[in-house]
Length: 129
Image (cartoon, rainbow, N blue to C red; front, side):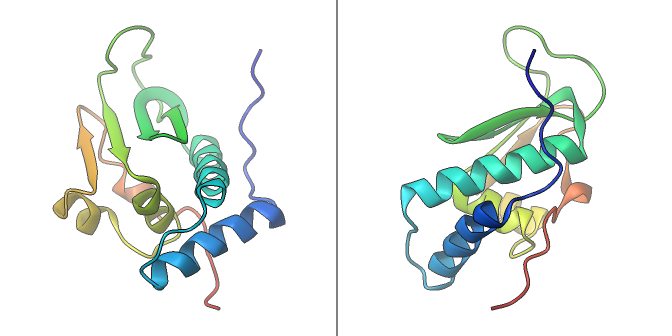
């Protein structure tokens, strides 16, 4: 049996998130390992905040989770999906960008019933450096 996602971000995970945000602010790319840890930590936090199985949220190639209560997805294509790149997810989760801006720019694609998760973000407060 899989363990439930943790509802917190560790100081080490927060360091990876901070490193990613600093790189994005400089219009550069963080190390792949930083994006991986940051994406997984934030996805676990999202899954803890909005547990369920009705929406599959994907951040390829690093993280995916089924979230939001409702119809349970078991096989095949899920009835609702959200997908974005790691930068968009990290910036969305920390409030650097918002849902409307991300979808409008085509950086985040949401389809299906219950896929508008705009009310869940941001999920982590990050103080300004």
